Every structure is written in C-alpha cells, then in structure tokens.
Length: 484
Length: 124
Image (tube, rainbow over all chains, first blue to last red; front, side, top):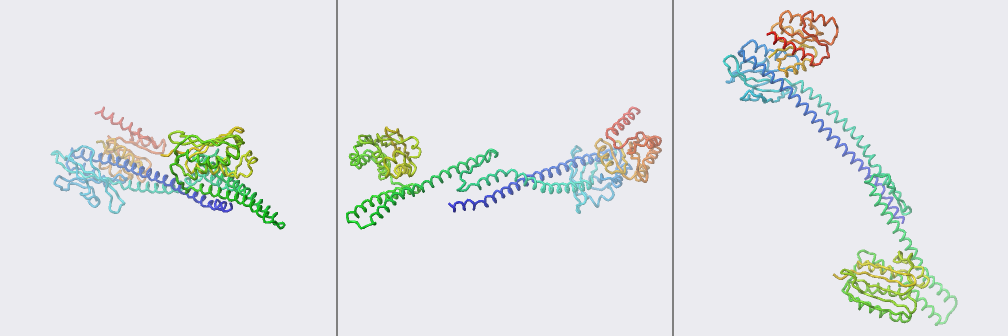
C-alpha cells in the first residue's frame, strides 16, 4: 500500500512539468501566429504603399511625356521652349525632379538635362514602345550607392514641322520615396519588435489563464491516494473539453475504489477462513498433548486433524485455481464434448451422496459443446454439489443440456432446495461470500464454489446465471458458446 | 497645356500641389525658393502662379507685384496661413486675383481655376 502511495506522489512533479511545457508551447504558438500575422500585414502594407507610389509617379511621368510632346509638336528640338522645359529639370528644388534626354532614331543625342549622362545612362532605360498608346513601360533603377532611385520610361515623339521621330527618355528621381520607404521599414521593424514583446506577454497570460482548469484537474488528481479513493472531481465549473476527462477520471477512481475495497475484503476473508481450521488444529493438538494418550486416542486426533488439513488443502487449491484463472495468459484446452455423457458421469459421481441424502438426480437433454473437459466437470460438479447441500431430503436435482440457439449451449442445474435470498444474489459470485442461509445450514463451506464456476465460464467466454426463489429452489444456468 | 507654377517654402505643399495638378493635365512646376522663382519668372511666362505670401528672402507680395507688372494675363493666386486682412488687401492691391487662406481645400483652388479658364474661354 505504501509503495503504491509513493508511486502516485512520485508522478506528481512530472505531471506539473508537462503542463508547464504545454503553457510554453501554446504561448509560443500564439506568438508565432501573432508574428506571422504582423509580418504579413506589414509586408502587405509596404507593398500597397509601393503600389501607390508607383501609380502616382506613373501619372507624373505620363504628364511630363505629354508636356514634351506638346512642345515638340509646335517647335523644333532646338527651340527655346524645349530648352526652358529641360532647364526645369535642374532647377527643381522639390523632391519631384525629372531627367530628360532626346535623341534621334539613329541614336544621335539631341538634347539632355544637365548632369543626366553621369547618373542615368541610355542603356538603363527600357526601349520605347512602337505605338504612342498608354501604358508605357516604367522600370525602377537604384543607384549603385543605394541612396538614389529612379523610375524610367522611354517614348517616341514627333518633332517640329517635319514630324521628325525622336526618342524621349524620362527619369524621375524617387529618392524621397526611398527615404520614406526606409522610414516605413523602420516603423514596421519597431512594430514587429513590439508585437513580439506584446504577443509574448499576452500569449503567455492567455495560455496560463486558458490552462487553469487543467492545473485544477492536476491538483484534484494529486489529492487522490489509497486513503482518499473517495475523492471525486467536481466537473460543474469546468469547460466541456475537460468535463469528459473528469468523467473518465471519476469513473476509473470509482472502479479503483471498488477493486481496492474488494481486495481488502478478500484479504480479511481469507485470513478469517484460514483462522478457523488452524485454530481447530491447534486446539485439538494442545488438548491431545495435555496428558499422555493411548494409541487409539492419538489416532482419533490425527484423523480429525486430517479432516482440517483436507479443508485447508481444498481452500488453497481453490485459491490457486482462481489465481490461475485470473491470469489473462491462462489458456484452456477445449475439445468437442458430448454434454449428455459428461453430465451422466457427474450424476454417477454424486449418486452415492445423493442416495445418502435421499435426493433424486436426473439428467436430461443432449448437445455437443466445445469446452475443457476437466473444467466443465468441475463447474457442473460444483453446482451439483451445492444443490445437494441445500436441497432437503425427498427433493430432486435436475441437470439438463439444451441447444439454446445457433450459437449457444445451455447447461442448467435445477434443485428444489432452500433457494437464495434476493439480497444475496448480486454478491453470490464474490470470493468467500456466503449467503446467510448457506452459512447456517452448511458451515463448512468456503465460499469459493460459485466464484470458481464463474471463472471457468469466463475462461470459456460464456456466462453464468443464477435464478432463485427462497423455499422453492434455484436454477443455475451455464451458457457456453456453441462449437464453430 | 496650361503652365502652372507653385511657390511655397513648405516643400510638402509644393509636392502635393504639383502631383495634384499634374494629374489634372497642367504642365506644373514647383519651387520652394522664392528668389529662384522670381528669376525664372523674368524669363518665362506662366498661365497660373500660385504663391505663398509669407516667405523669405523674397516674399510672395513681391512675386505678385512682379508678375502683375510683367505678365498681365497670368492668373495670380496668393495663399497664406495668416488671415491678416492687411495681407489680403495688400495682395489684391498688388494685383492678386484670388487669396486663399491656409489650410485650404483643393476644391477652393480648383473652383478658382475653373472660373478663370471659363471666363477666358468666353472672352476669346
């Protein structure tokens, strides 16, 4: 008992560690979820802002293309108006800053914003589309030092009165946007960092709170010990996910309490059953030794002792049998039996006792069954023995066999005895249990006969059923599975 | 294409106005340096000039005076955060067509421009 208690207490620390790691695991998952959400949202935000910028810049570039085309439609490439327009490229002191280059179809440079050649080479630009239709292809270019960025496009235009085709390369400085984007990036990083901290705290708090019922379960389970098997978990305030666990736990503790109770009753019954024959032996031996006896007297004592030894031997043999039958590894040797022959043999065995007691034993019916012959005889023998014990002179015991249905053979032993009280029936198969009537009428019984019958039926995969009416008799029915 | 010049020492305002009017089909230029603006205006005419008043070293009133003197056809819009009456009167004395108080709604300038171009169309 004490080792069992130690085992239960010994498991406690590991149980609390695993619930803690569950908190951590859930908190980590929470953080991960929050983080991935944050990162996705941030990336989407940055992408959306970039899209917005690109759209805005495209409008500016298209407008500039239109301005230049407009000027060229009325003026030559060398005109004052175009030079004024290009002068703006270098004059602009706001972040909207253009670069313009014009060359003819042969690639001869006609006009270029000051300083443009150093920053934006011709090859960086996309090639101009054949048609004048929008949209035009816009590419993004980053300066090698990474501090400047440009959006570039190329278009065709017709210059002067002779509609000479020229190629227009336009660059828009978007370094301001890059600075902005970097700023947004910093904000996003700060957002994610604080998101990590916040979601860690919140995630941990939520998980701890969410798992509180689990800790309560653990605590409730910890209170259970062999001396506190009556502990039950109150499931009313628990979430439904855990109430099933509470039910299962309560059920198994109930089963344990039951088994534990039976075990301790069994031990005390066993001690009690052993005490009587041993006391008898001791008493008789002591009396015999108190003075010198004749050889005849010693013989009488020894014969009486032999009876007690026989009782002890039957008791231990019965217990041993039950212990073996309880072992799930126990196998029985089944064979095909002619049930009518078997019960006839049993009747034969008990005929002298029956005659002595003035009881008629009748056999009826026939069937084939698949059973261990020795165990079968023992089970029926126990029942017949019991029936003979509790049936008054002039009564009868009927052993009958019948094919109950396709899959079962029933063997029943019916007597016209004193019967069993209904309050005794539920416990009648418990070891050492003896019905009150049996105890008074037949004090030398041990209370192992019916438990052994039940064990034998369990080994055969069958069932035993007892039906009784006090004063009228008892029918014990054994239901065996039919041979396949 | 109508040429439009925006002058304000606040770059954010110039940027957003330039983007806004470029979208609306103007050939739109912007400057934050009023001195540079004045030099440019000496060489190049604009249909519309929108200028802040409170600037240095050259203030918006001088720009208004210069434009009115040299480019009589230009639509001149002054804007200022100072709702000082003197400013407003002074600006209109110097020849500003409209005066807009900051903060303004873009609709205000839009309406002014529409009305101006409508009148011009009718006159021609």
